[in-house]
Length: 267
Length: 305
Image: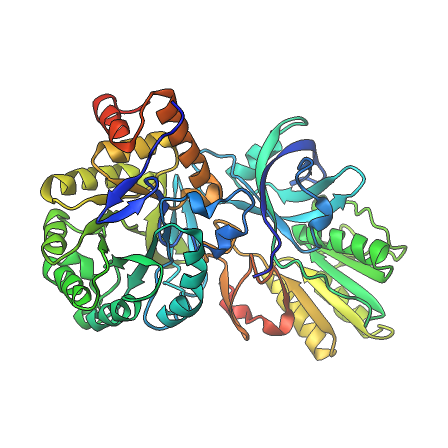
């Protein structure tokens, strides 16, 4: 077990804004006891549930850090009573959180010409942080693919890479009409040099991305999500069977080599 | 008043305070060791995750489901097995200087006996907690803890293999819990812990998944069952079931628990046990209660806060 400590702190809400029909962005200031640069892309935090009758932690991927402001961002879709209550939080209010959680090992892009980030829906969140780290800190080339149901679901991505974002919507109201995986499978054939793929989104989408990568002999990482009660490897609610044995998404993941994942074990 | 002595002695084991984790909501201490602000040396005891004779991968997904004021778990006793516990986990737990309780779960009576034999002389182990809520393979899968004779048979088999104090964890999923409590007491149990989770189901993609319900939703049931058992047995009780704040601790002490275990509440706040120990000390200090006995008297007469 690594030595990195998990902090349990109260963060102040710096910003909590609606960015699409049902997606909100929250900027949290964790205070001086917490160094945001300790968060690696792919890692997440747990927020204490706001609903008094909720008993389980709420995990959220970190979608960005600001080393200047010492804050971090999460993106959330309003899906239940807790996320609805989160929407009510305003600047200056606070929320208990713990983190950073998940494997802190940083993916090294240097063996690859480009890193392709394939996000579906709210799954784009951790990839935005990846994009910043890859292009700004690792000085590497990133290309972003972003898919959703329709234009109302799509957020404006504030990226560093000069590469245009590849966009697909199922109804064609924005970008390519169809699944992002369709667009990805068209583009992967035209790749120049060795690429690495990192994907996050609905399970069927990630499975498809992993399949396309395997067919094209491309390395692929997937960022998995499962309901978890604690985020600290205690409840074992997010334990999954992999080709490498039982793994905890909150601790061994949430980033996994696609080759490890047994898709029909994800429930 | 400066010093408050919250220590309690149960079955010859001295606990520095009556707050300990409930098995399955605490890993094997190494997970909580990573939490900044968690001081494991301050806990009343460390309680291991349910350990079985052989390693178990546990159940497929989905494994947990939230319900109002509760959650259902369908983990399936994922654990590395008793040998790994002895070789790796217990030595880690032993460095904090507080009693260690190892929770053992079996599917056949000889499983329990063999684990007790293996754990008997392991350095650092203070007591065994026997989980009798597991399905008894030999008896068509009915839990050991649902039948007084079978429950007693487990305790007798374990007693023959170890001199360690035995804490028997009762299942609430019975028509009448008192005969079970009496049976395990008479079979040699030193302590009763209760309650384990209640059977509950959730629906996932049309499939009915049965697991164990925990959390504040089950607290009234725990209080009710403990108050029944307290009147029938002479051995002490460690109370658990939805405890999430100081008033809950008082309520369990009020019905006769000698100590309490914190389970699901650890998930919503990883520092809840630290906070409860601190609040308990502060309460005693503020009310001039120098020791746990005095606290108990006050709670029983006034109901606490």
